[in-house]
Amino acid sequence: MPKVKQYDKYPKEWCNLSDCKKKAEDKKGIQKVQDKINERSKKKDHLLAKKAYTYLFDRGSHVAIPNRQNYILTGSPHGSKMIGSFYDELIKRNVQVILTANQANESSSCPEFWSNKELKHVKLKGDWQIENVENRTKIHAKGKGDSKIVERILHLKKGKETREITHLHYEKWKDKNPAPDTELLHALLDRKDELHKSKNVPVDVPFVVNCKAGKGRTGTLAILDYARKEVDAQVAKGKKLNEVSLNIPEMIYEMRKQRPSLLGRTSQVQQVYQALGLYHDRLKAKHK
Image (cartoon, rainbow, N blue to C red):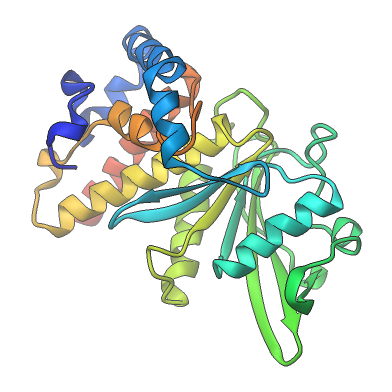
């Protein structure tokens, strides 16, 4: 990320990728910066955000990071009308992948919007029909305890035209907490990247990230994805791995201008740093 004027809010927070694991242990330091981000969001940034973002289907925001990735970050859609509007938006934008981080039915606002039980009540625009192809559901990866990534296929049909949306679900991730297994965060994003690459999906086509409110768990995944892409871009330009640096608070700030209140918990920001430490170790092993 270039050190230009719009990125001078937290100039002391640049961190070498190789130091992210150590940075994750600095809870007090992260909390101090997070307090600044939260305070700014209550004042100036929230007013700025009102001009920069548009809510989609009541609970979602379109977040665009130029030359990196577009996202739809959202709370869980609920009720047949909102679920219908959710899928209408995905069809319009040709979304290929949904990442879900909330537990199924963890509250009344978190129904299984991917299940045929819910989908059978949904009416989509343009005569589209949607169905969960249940016999193609599989466990993509297992983590600590009962945590796992479940992969489902949602089949869309309109006349002779068909599409598929892959639903990747990080199960057993509790609200207001870090993910139970940091490695599974990478498994989830790796699978998303694999699907996008196999389908030649351009970066301006968003993928969806959702949890209960579309803030904490959603923010963990979105910021980590953004950071991974920034690392990959720097390496692709010829930077040595020990020269790669990131400014996570500024990334959070940039996304909050389009999705207020994103990633507000210190423990979840710590996990982003922890996950980036693992990403460094992976790349180091790969480039030996």
